Image 1 (tube, helix red, strand yellow):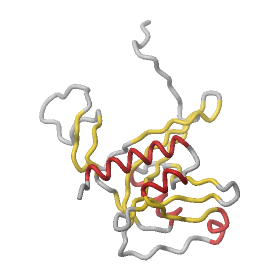
Image 2 (cartoon, helix red, strand yellow; image 1 turned 120 degrees about the vertical axis):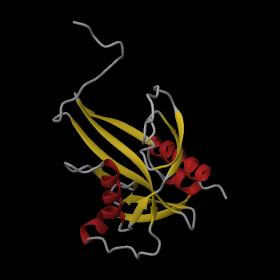
Image 3 (tube, one colour; image 1 turned 60 degrees about the horizontal axis):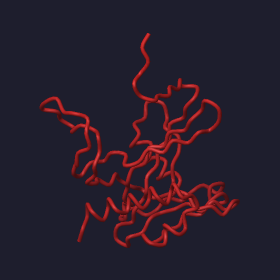
Image 4 (cartoon, helix red, strand yellow; image 1 turned 90 degrees about the vertical axis):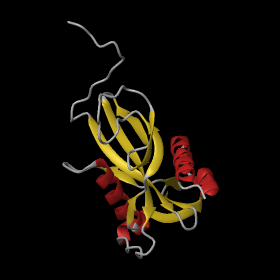
Length: 181
Protein backbone atom coordinates (compact mmCIF):
# COMPACT_ATOMS: atom_id res chain seq x y z
CA UNK A 1 0.00 0.00 0.00
CA UNK A 2 1.20 3.46 -0.85
CA UNK A 3 1.02 6.52 1.36
CA UNK A 4 0.37 10.04 0.16
CA UNK A 5 3.35 12.17 -0.83
CA UNK A 6 1.87 14.97 1.26
CA UNK A 7 1.68 15.33 5.02
CA UNK A 8 -2.00 14.67 5.63
CA UNK A 9 -4.55 14.41 8.39
CA UNK A 10 -7.99 12.89 8.22
CA UNK A 11 -10.97 13.48 10.50
CA UNK A 12 -14.31 11.70 10.57
CA UNK A 13 -17.52 13.64 11.20
CA UNK A 14 -17.31 12.94 14.94
CA UNK A 15 -13.89 14.61 15.11
CA UNK A 16 -14.48 17.98 13.43
CA UNK A 17 -16.89 20.86 13.64
CA UNK A 18 -17.31 23.31 10.81
CA UNK A 19 -18.00 26.97 11.55
CA UNK A 20 -18.33 30.08 9.43
CA UNK A 21 -18.12 33.77 10.14
CA UNK A 22 -17.67 37.08 8.44
CA UNK A 23 -15.78 40.28 8.95
CA UNK A 24 -18.73 42.68 8.94
CA UNK A 25 -17.94 46.01 7.27
CA UNK A 26 -20.00 49.17 7.61
CA UNK A 27 -18.75 50.64 4.35
CA UNK A 28 -20.21 54.16 4.76
CA UNK A 29 -18.15 54.83 7.89
CA UNK A 30 -15.26 52.43 7.20
CA UNK A 31 -15.86 50.45 10.37
CA UNK A 32 -15.85 46.79 11.37
CA UNK A 33 -18.24 45.12 13.79
CA UNK A 34 -16.88 43.20 16.78
CA UNK A 35 -18.45 41.45 19.74
CA UNK A 36 -17.19 42.41 23.20
CA UNK A 37 -17.64 39.37 25.42
CA UNK A 38 -18.67 40.95 28.70
CA UNK A 39 -17.68 38.18 31.10
CA UNK A 40 -14.10 37.91 29.79
CA UNK A 41 -13.73 41.40 28.27
CA UNK A 42 -12.57 39.86 24.98
CA UNK A 43 -13.13 41.30 21.52
CA UNK A 44 -14.01 38.73 18.86
CA UNK A 45 -15.84 38.40 15.55
CA UNK A 46 -19.26 36.90 14.88
CA UNK A 47 -19.18 33.26 13.81
CA UNK A 48 -20.86 29.97 14.58
CA UNK A 49 -21.43 26.38 13.59
CA UNK A 50 -22.70 25.46 10.16
CA UNK A 51 -25.98 23.53 10.20
CA UNK A 52 -26.41 20.28 8.28
CA UNK A 53 -27.20 21.02 4.64
CA UNK A 54 -26.32 24.71 4.97
CA UNK A 55 -23.75 26.32 2.70
CA UNK A 56 -20.71 27.94 4.26
CA UNK A 57 -21.52 31.44 3.06
CA UNK A 58 -25.16 31.12 4.17
CA UNK A 59 -23.98 29.96 7.61
CA UNK A 60 -21.61 32.91 7.91
CA UNK A 61 -24.31 35.45 7.04
CA UNK A 62 -26.87 33.79 9.32
CA UNK A 63 -24.48 33.70 12.28
CA UNK A 64 -23.41 37.31 11.80
CA UNK A 65 -27.03 38.48 11.62
CA UNK A 66 -28.05 36.39 14.64
CA UNK A 67 -25.16 37.57 16.79
CA UNK A 68 -25.00 41.23 15.77
CA UNK A 69 -28.62 41.99 14.88
CA UNK A 70 -27.45 43.54 11.59
CA UNK A 71 -28.76 42.29 8.27
CA UNK A 72 -25.83 41.78 5.94
CA UNK A 73 -24.90 40.70 2.45
CA UNK A 74 -21.85 39.00 0.99
CA UNK A 75 -19.13 41.47 0.06
CA UNK A 76 -17.52 40.46 -3.25
CA UNK A 77 -13.75 40.83 -3.24
CA UNK A 78 -10.92 40.78 -5.73
CA UNK A 79 -8.65 38.08 -4.32
CA UNK A 80 -5.97 35.59 -5.16
CA UNK A 81 -7.02 31.98 -4.66
CA UNK A 82 -6.12 28.52 -5.83
CA UNK A 83 -9.75 27.79 -6.67
CA UNK A 84 -10.48 27.39 -10.38
CA UNK A 85 -12.88 29.82 -12.06
CA UNK A 86 -16.64 29.34 -11.64
CA UNK A 87 -16.85 28.14 -15.24
CA UNK A 88 -13.97 26.03 -16.47
CA UNK A 89 -13.69 26.15 -20.24
CA UNK A 90 -10.59 23.96 -20.15
CA UNK A 91 -8.50 21.99 -17.67
CA UNK A 92 -6.79 24.48 -15.35
CA UNK A 93 -3.67 23.82 -13.36
CA UNK A 94 -3.51 24.14 -9.58
CA UNK A 95 -2.02 27.58 -9.06
CA UNK A 96 -2.85 30.90 -7.48
CA UNK A 97 -4.86 33.21 -9.73
CA UNK A 98 -6.66 36.51 -9.25
CA UNK A 99 -10.46 36.40 -9.31
CA UNK A 100 -12.48 39.59 -9.34
CA UNK A 101 -15.60 40.23 -7.27
CA UNK A 102 -15.94 36.74 -5.79
CA UNK A 103 -17.75 35.81 -2.57
CA UNK A 104 -15.43 33.07 -1.43
CA UNK A 105 -13.84 32.48 1.97
CA UNK A 106 -10.65 34.53 2.18
CA UNK A 107 -9.31 32.69 5.26
CA UNK A 108 -9.62 29.25 6.81
CA UNK A 109 -8.70 28.96 10.48
CA UNK A 110 -8.05 25.54 11.98
CA UNK A 111 -8.28 25.25 15.74
CA UNK A 112 -7.18 22.10 17.50
CA UNK A 113 -9.80 21.34 20.13
CA UNK A 114 -8.10 18.37 21.70
CA UNK A 115 -6.64 15.03 20.75
CA UNK A 116 -7.97 14.20 17.28
CA UNK A 117 -10.54 17.01 17.19
CA UNK A 118 -10.52 20.19 15.11
CA UNK A 119 -12.70 23.20 14.40
CA UNK A 120 -12.62 24.58 10.87
CA UNK A 121 -13.69 28.22 10.56
CA UNK A 122 -14.37 29.61 7.08
CA UNK A 123 -14.18 33.43 7.00
CA UNK A 124 -16.00 35.64 4.50
CA UNK A 125 -16.39 39.40 4.07
CA UNK A 126 -19.85 40.90 4.53
CA UNK A 127 -21.37 44.36 4.41
CA UNK A 128 -24.05 45.76 6.68
CA UNK A 129 -27.35 46.38 4.87
CA UNK A 130 -27.37 49.96 6.10
CA UNK A 131 -30.93 50.76 5.00
CA UNK A 132 -32.31 47.98 7.26
CA UNK A 133 -32.46 48.88 10.97
CA UNK A 134 -30.73 46.43 13.32
CA UNK A 135 -32.89 43.76 14.90
CA UNK A 136 -33.31 43.63 18.65
CA UNK A 137 -31.15 40.88 20.13
CA UNK A 138 -32.51 38.58 22.82
CA UNK A 139 -31.96 39.70 26.44
CA UNK A 140 -29.68 36.73 27.18
CA UNK A 141 -27.42 37.74 24.31
CA UNK A 142 -27.29 41.36 25.52
CA UNK A 143 -26.05 40.07 28.88
CA UNK A 144 -23.30 38.00 27.22
CA UNK A 145 -21.83 40.46 24.73
CA UNK A 146 -22.03 43.96 23.28
CA UNK A 147 -22.00 44.75 19.56
CA UNK A 148 -19.53 47.53 18.73
CA UNK A 149 -18.07 49.12 15.59
CA UNK A 150 -14.48 50.34 15.27
CA UNK A 151 -12.49 52.07 12.53
CA UNK A 152 -10.21 49.97 10.35
CA UNK A 153 -7.20 51.03 12.44
CA UNK A 154 -8.83 50.86 15.88
CA UNK A 155 -10.26 47.38 15.31
CA UNK A 156 -6.75 45.95 14.99
CA UNK A 157 -5.96 47.24 18.47
CA UNK A 158 -9.26 46.02 19.95
CA UNK A 159 -9.38 42.39 18.80
CA UNK A 160 -8.12 40.11 21.57
CA UNK A 161 -6.47 37.37 19.52
CA UNK A 162 -3.53 37.82 17.16
CA UNK A 163 -4.94 35.34 14.65
CA UNK A 164 -8.11 37.44 14.40
CA UNK A 165 -6.08 40.65 14.02
CA UNK A 166 -4.08 39.08 11.17
CA UNK A 167 -7.25 37.85 9.48
CA UNK A 168 -9.04 41.21 9.78
CA UNK A 169 -5.95 43.01 8.48
CA UNK A 170 -6.14 40.81 5.38
CA UNK A 171 -9.89 41.53 5.01
CA UNK A 172 -9.28 45.28 5.23
CA UNK A 173 -6.53 45.02 2.62
CA UNK A 174 -8.84 43.09 0.27
CA UNK A 175 -11.70 45.57 0.72
CA UNK A 176 -9.42 48.57 0.17
CA UNK A 177 -7.92 46.97 -2.97
CA UNK A 178 -11.32 45.96 -4.34
CA UNK A 179 -13.13 49.22 -3.61
CA UNK A 180 -10.32 51.75 -4.08
CA UNK A 181 -11.66 55.28 -4.21
